[in-house]
Length: 306
Image (cartoon, rainbow, N blue to C red):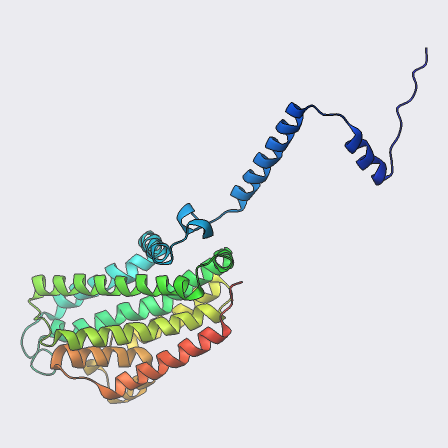
């Protein structure tokens, strides 16, 4: 007994014709459509990288911005190196040098204690670490992982994404400053600044200027390794030569003059003038404003999402 061979369909049109003439029951059609819909829905869910409250259909701009800021805050605190240089390292310097030099009257210029004089420098150190290490690395990680590209196709504007980073880093700066000041007040009896608003203005100006530098670095450096390498190369020389970790009254005159080329020197001097003397350092503030505006402008021009 010979069976007739099954027809061979090789042409694509014949395949489609065979598909169309096949009879399917309504139940089969419904099942097929449902499975196709479920498959497509699953694919969309697989492609979705944003949480439900950040999806375009349910997006409230302010709510999305606040949620994004809160998420970035938690991610920042989970990063060991960022937390160390923002919180632990300034406290380590405070207690180490405070134990060595104390805070006796006249141990620093202006008849103030050494720890009182050095405290604004430790705050400047925090500013430098956030601007040169924290923000560039965060932006580089987001670019490497494609997160910036995904944000680009949502209704969230670029300013919201970058603004959330700025808010988080400024909040970390203020929190670190409060913790550092509280520890210095409690352990070494460091007095509070007489002009708090002036000191707060100096803190915000220096912080925003260095965040602009970080934005520029994050815009031009293509990888996480590059961001970390350049950030470390900029931060650590400034750390020891700007007066942030070691007060400049211990420096020789030639080193004081040379350090004026470092932006962190002007951040430390601006904070010291406001904190210790209740005065505004005009020259240092002009340097920081010029640096911040230039870096923000160039960074916005060259910034890329991928």
